[in-house]
Amino acid sequence: MKLAIAGKGGVGKTTLAAALARRAAGAGRRVIAVDADPAGGLASALGLPEDKLPEPIAGMRSLVEERTGARGEGPGLVFRLNPDVEDIPDRFSADADGVRVLVLGTVNRGGRGCMCPEGALLKALMQHVLLRIEDDVILDMEAGFEHIGRASAAGVDAMLTVVEPGMRSVEVARRIGKLARDIGVTRTPVVLNKVSGPDEEETLRRALKGRTVLGVLPYSEELARADLEGRSGESLGGEFAAAVERVWLALEAMLVREKRSSV
Image (tube, rainbow, N blue to C red):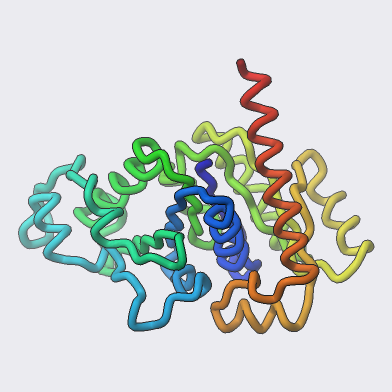
């Protein structure tokens, strides 16, 4: 299973990504959880202490230079667009109780954009993880939809968008769905998060008419506190854990059903 999790900032993407990665690992599956959000937080949400957090790949200057052949910077810089990345997931990931965590980082030097050595390395790494590794992959994407515009999530089985009560979140989900389809991702289900009751759920379902809703995660003060502190909501148990389980089962059923229908 290759799953990208997207949505507006602050909707709970990282909490859900961590919970689903834990669920997959708990089922005995090999899992790579990829933090593709420049804001970070997935490793912490999976319980890794600060001194065990993996170093962001984009910030490893010597590795970037070694793999891309880039030296220096500025106009006229020449570098490889297809660097060797095969060993990176094993060498630079950290283990979080059975979940391998890989942090991509971001290009943070102004004016370089995505056509730069760091961008080339990250793109090649994403393609390798999604297309050449058989493990389950859970991608915690950056907020919004710029990653889709760069087609960096092509190759996923589904792009799951997290939606919270609010029309801005709904609008972002609509745009993510359209842009995902533009790069060939046809499965774009949503998960409703921070829902306080049936009225909010119904309003969101109406606003998202035509989109598959895999599940509803309840709002709670405990969950909000865990999300704020970068902890996985899995530790809360109870209603949240049951809701994540329903999302997981619905996701598996959707992928199995569509795989059978395409045979």
